[in-house]
Image (tube, rainbow over all chains, first blue to last red):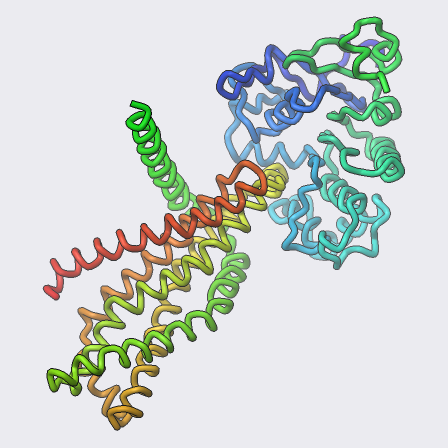
Length: 250
Length: 260
């Protein structure tokens, strides 16, 4: 991961601006995610991390700037092209966002509904669902409803759903928030295993220092809507800058 | 001064909301004719909306028929016009009371349910998750629900009308010794197409309004769990108002074409 200048990013944000009224959430924010890397974006609650990832997948329209995923500008893209590109991106939501009126199986089948090129027949749908659940160690929960699962299990099922289309890029929005330390460690371990198995590029939004330490290849600190500082976990954790130190103090 | 500013702000936000709702219904008409069609979800929603409202509509209709006849009988008897009871009840229920009362009941039962369900899906990011997975949540959640209410409400209203007439027939049979055959013969003699067709067309618009407002309020819900409650509540309030506006327009148009 050293010679980044020679690598092409799979995902790039340039000069992103987003305001809600007088609240300037993102101000000239820049980010590059390279193939196979785990990039952690850290910031305080309310610093605009979630807004940034929602801009990334086209859920929020930025005021200005450009967003390029796999060399395609998503801001100027039509709905159909964007939907197609979204199937190459897995998204783990902060609160899991499982469809609570559907079983675990139906939750996992939902992203496959319109992807006929990825799923040939019912048998392969079943196989994909089974494989995704095995990856997160929850094969026996297929016919349960989300309300019957614990918080950690829900997060795992959400991860399985994000993985079902075998995306090349995975975005994790606060993957360990609201979980106990042991379950959080299990989720982090799962994220590492998935990265090894599928060689995905991951963008992880978190304010969990332990998560960042274990999983990051590179980190960006988001302060006042801009990328304040960038570097490895060790570089940042040893920084003398009080604004950076504030993130790593216990 | 402050009062006039508040009135101005409120009326501005009211008209903005009306505009947003018009855009929302425009999107519905755009999406409803474009592929892929969500037939399975439409059937599921139709079943949910229709089947789960049967008991409520049935009981309401039955009591409506009973009470309406019981209340009207003494007045008609005073004028010696009790033989007009089947015609009067039949026309009133089919033309106006049946559709409006049942639509209001359904606005409470179905509209608030849709508002709360979609609202909770919005605040827990389930709608965002659908969109990110490359599916169109508007088509899957909104189009199917609006179509289901538009299709199911006329059926529920027809059923409610029939049960209300049956309730009325029971009272007439018990109190006035009118046979069921005679009662229904008189009802159908009094009814014409100019009563049944406008009422059915009106109930299609009622169904559309219930689905549209419930979906609009839920789909655009914000402010967390408080917002879900607000979405559910305002879905019922807005729909109820809209039902009376539609009813007035329907009666006005019917008067032009059928000279009621």
